[in-house]
Image (cartoon, rainbow, N blue to C red; front, side, top):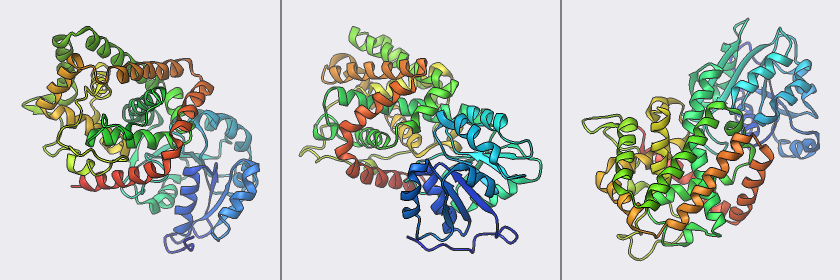
Length: 445
């Protein structure tokens, strides 16, 4: 492992200790990055993980693994709770009373309303609350990625200390309230995740590995496949908390399922004119009028960038991929239109997944000929009809799970599909990481 450094710790903070409660993928990433910058880190996870974590971080002099959150809380100056959103209240209730006098506490959950409530309910009144949220996964380079900081309770200038600690991530800091954070993350993540979860569930239901079929070829399909596998390679709770605990997310996921269902019914009924009218109306609301577009002159994505990232072998004739109606993309724009969401409004807080998904959606809608072909295929071609049926079932299933607030049902649905795709995760993660890196590089000004 990389040796610990000390050059990034500012004068006067040499003895400042960062505590991390929850050493999942994001907790470990923070521990590594902060210790690399010279910060002293005390961390813990569930007690049964104590021995393995000590072995994993044994070579890092700046990281001390402790048995539980009581020991972390009583000794640390800034404590970050990096736990599942569904568990935040229980964990803070257990360890919060042990918080060091005058310390700073924050969280890394994807839904801030229950997190802030847990802090207010269970932390001593002398503790400041400065939360954060890195809007990307643990395998993404933090440089330039959005990092939300929420200054909820600050009685002694704690924000400046937190900024100094997190500076080493080299992320783009965005200052929001907890409510603003939850609204924006719903707008940029909830429906994006629902679309990929639904695609994966549909392919699983059909016992189909899409990269092994000539049906899913080309740039847009590469994004669908790679990012679906990227999501299913994560832990189930990463997306469950945002979807189930965030009221805005629940509303949006329900609307996405409704949009998928209604568009699919128009396709089945052969109502091309009605389908075209609805989709073009949604396009105008989301992307603007032809003479006043909301998208930039430069497309977010280019075919030549995406075409190189395929999990399967390319067919001999790349000039004629099977036509696809792209129901998942049509429904995305229909959903945004129904909810009054303009995706470009929150680009500063967008995740790499959202930028890719918006990029392929924009890619379809920027080209009138490509969009019209998709609408014509939707009604006149049955090639993807069974796929779209399974996709519709999947979208409605996820929406019902979210509406009922069933974490266990979510976990069961997710893990079952995860196990189906698991043999291909290593290759998918490698290709997906390369794709994200290439796309982010290509979209730099």
